[in-house]
Image 1: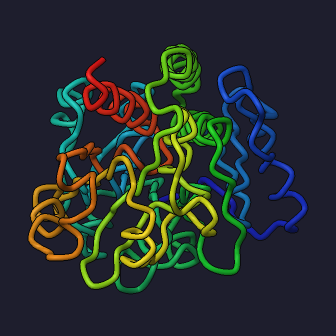
Image 2 (image 1 turned 180 degrees about the horizontal axis):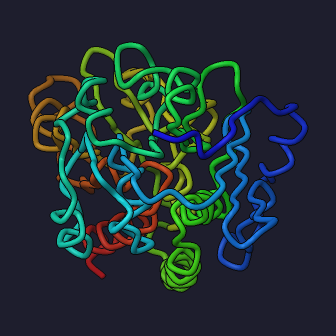
Length: 333
């Protein structure tokens, strides 16, 4: 396996330059491509989670290690450059299913190092830094020595490295970076243009104005909730809703049932994942003697959103429509 790339550390200022704050108008903001450099027709340079990736030419044998990374590639019509995929949280959307089915599934979760290396990848893409550990396919440095470039979603950088702020602009920036790495930049540009239009339609016809929401991701004794700086918050902002936990830092965080009960939210959003289904969470709420007294539980004011639609990435835009449509149905619109 030839060493087709160079990967090294960069100063934090370089990384932070590509992480702009949330724009006032998320639809009109153009996704930044400041961290992507292409000095020649084939050469690609991307700054990613504190490291610089330099490819002599776009990757042609990529492996995706999380659903979000897989969907980034599928959304930009890059499936032909995949030699393997792994780790789904839920179902792949019908619009991408045919492309997904054309790619070999290496494992239900993270593949073993042996299985991963047997695919002979030249690039590995992940949504979370957990993919690149000794317990998964190996560390980034280890894989670099074997000629395999690695890319982590800028929203999932490892501890000690600043992650990107969750904005639509940064979601689109990630799609552009993935497009550059696998030679599908035109596909990325096309997908991003469509997402601009999609988001504009949601924000023009929002159905959540003034609605208080608790985003129930998982957990029972301690609820894991959508906090004030992640995908769930971005979706609630898009539809005009108020997040009960907007003052909590992070994308997701531990909440408290006491605060949820005291807030008596208008609507409860339940995330649906294979490892924590919406059905189980609703049953838990209805079965608890205290929680079932909340208005939203009594009146069945639940909106189910697939977990993959709540994480920053290509499917996040679908989460905006799912949430908006669910709120419209509750309101009888």
